[in-house]
Image (tube, rainbow, N blue to C red; front, side):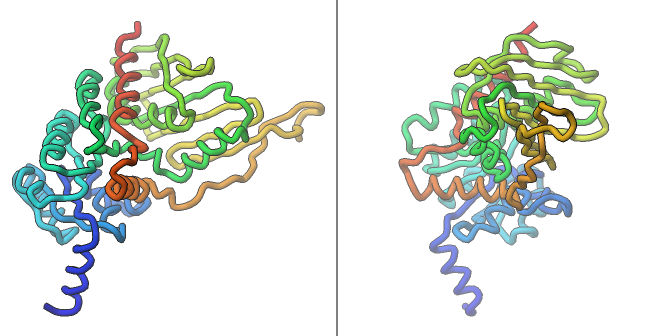
Length: 337
């Protein structure tokens, strides 16, 4: 055994083995996107983390197994049982939402202490609610991939709001456009779950929907979901629109003394100052506050999983209960007339 092999063997002996169930875009393939911040996938984040190594991966698709094996120089398996028999410390579940519950249960039964699970945690609120019990005994913790919780720009905005830098919160507006053809209800389930959870994270509160305007199960126009927070009388609007030839994802938090806009490629931190346009008025003036770069959203997520692995009494900062809270809003959106 040469020196390089000995070094790799010693590193694996002290690092956490991480297994992958599902080897598609978010697990591995998007690492090849030249424009995305790196790491851009779960596998990229594990590979870059000094305390982890990839122990193997499973996917039903042969081409994805081959690509994963080549890209990460890791063994691949044709069934999840054989993969979990390698006794990983962390398992990443990046499959279709229909199978999240089955693989979470399988990982817990195999004795895996920590799982990272893609969003939404389940395709329906009822199925998501059943999964929350997996964490109740404390022996199994889950990090749901609501990645904004681990992104430095969102964390900066959250701290600013909590510290009162924008005064008292007066309103929140979330906006999501995802191209021109997707139905609003499906966009809200698959990408709006990020938006809902980001609002919950930023405000430390939960959205209660009261009404909607627009055709929710349509792929045309725009639907508006109106509500307020459970713990404070602050209005919330979630806007989901189609017919746009671009992706747009942002949250605007408006306070008595300023506002912050944060989203995909968006960060604006504005405070009320004496207006340069109108005498005896105040205007929102850009404070030139810039978020740390890179945002570290995938790196932060694997670091959270490592923290949970190393501390068996720690609670996940993006738990199944947090994922369920987002699913509750989506369920309620479907019930509104």
